[in-house]
Image (tube, rainbow, N blue to C red; front, top):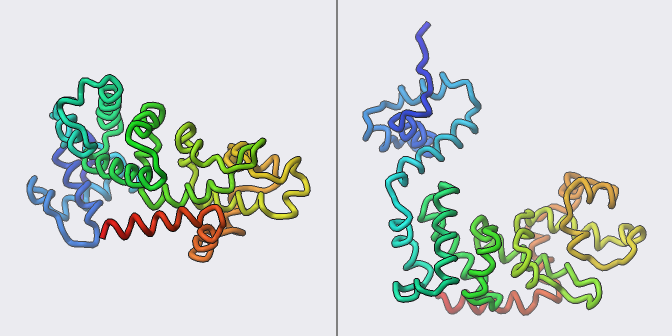
Length: 275
């Protein structure tokens, strides 16, 4: 029986080769592997010989690959790369708030081990969304200084979640607090759009309202921990996701809500300007 190769997480040559294979599987491309003199057969042996699951291998490989690519970059190098994409010039770096923002952003890139290009793209999409809802860059910087949730969502995701948040209201005024959620509680966007929709639909249901003290949907009702939600509303997230799938029909429904008419119009105008 042929002896299998042992996966060495500390060997950047193997790491890059296997990572390339994992990313390009099915496309027949092994550019990175070939550059390091590793053949496709050797890559397969490394994968077959590793006892960890493929998902574990892939996650480790991608992180290691990014580490190899970026380990020689200093914070100053990263700053130079990202500054032009967030509309800052050298003369503006003296501003204390902007300096704090940039410092945290650089530290985020280093600690998260994300590709700089990926982070820049996230910033661009977040800014596009925040412009849509009339939140300026100064406020955006303040949001990020408190929480980096926006760097883990794309424009479409943010847009849909903001539309869903229309049904979450203030206890006293009964008005939507979605702007407040974005500005002061950005962790709310970490809930999936599918779960937000399913929970809101459940809370809007007449039967559910029968055992609610108040029929209004507040943040403490819609965005609480899964165990607390299940205990209070006698159902589970899994069941709700089955009952209320966020499909094309659900998407259309959300933007037919009266609260979202102006949002949909602004989005159409933004898209038209981009053409």
